[in-house]
Image 1 (tube, one colour):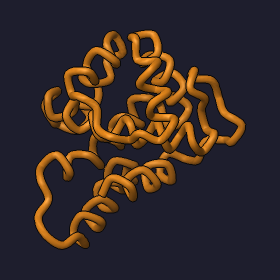
Image 2 (cartoon, helix red, strand yellow; image 1 turned 135 degrees about the vertical axis):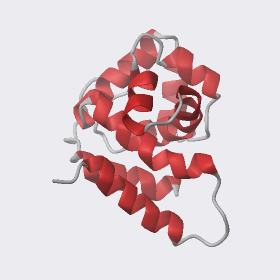
Image 3 (cartoon, helix red, strand yellow; image 1 turned 60 degrees about the vertical axis):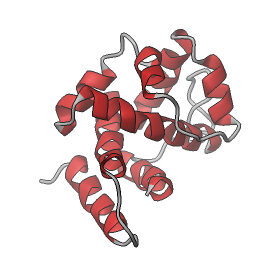
Image 4 (cartoon, helix red, strand yellow; image 1 turned 90 degrees about the vertical axis):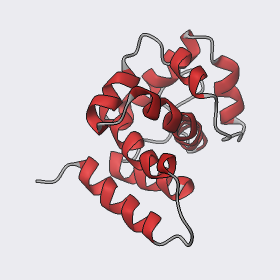
Length: 150
């Protein structure tokens, strides 16, 4: 049985392969990091915990900014402080085989997209509570976010 990680890698490979021109290493890491993150969170249900962790680590303004539509990448060093104590960076690194620095660099792009999508679709609120709209399965969520990333 193939894992969601394998499925995402195939999906991402198809999306990246369909682009004209080259892609940088960070872009090709995004699908693996997004998949690894959702696996670490336990799927879409952990998104609320992710938002709460960011809020508790002083990222309330960032969550509000992302919720209002700013999906620009954040500083990779800021990722580390926003996720401090969660073990997510190391967990994603272990799942993907990437270094923690590569994971932080990719999460700097993936987190704003994932959070904006989840908040704007009503799956989770800006304070980490379940939203009005049930979260989709992990594969659907990843496909939606990866479509915006790649």
